[in-house]
Length: 118
View 1 (cartoon, helix red, strand yellow):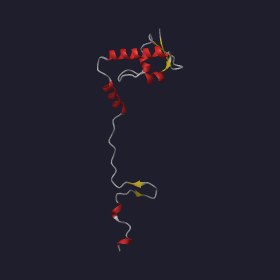
View 2: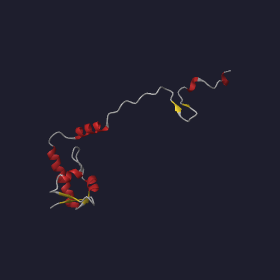
View 3: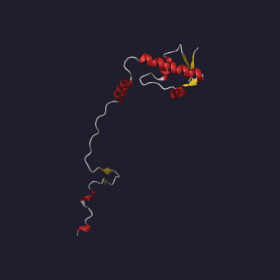
View 4: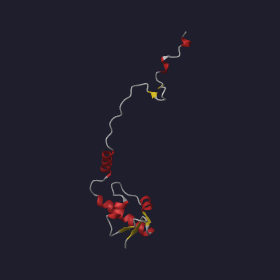
């Protein structure tokens, strides 16, 4: 009789369990495609985000906005500035930006406060 046969082939799509608690897959395993190194992708994204030429106007505008913020708020922590003064894509990060302009900005490495020099 067919009622006694519990090994029907209807369960072929269900994973099979082995005594060790591991599952066997129903299909044949396929190898994951080889991925490219992350550094290559990051470099491509940075290149795509960096505007070609004409970056001086964007830098000048960012410097003007940052200086205006510091005049209004006084010495401010870098984290606060980073969230309040938006940086255009392709511009250097805030720490690099201010370290390239020691005549304009002073960064206290201990407290993280950025001050506008007079």
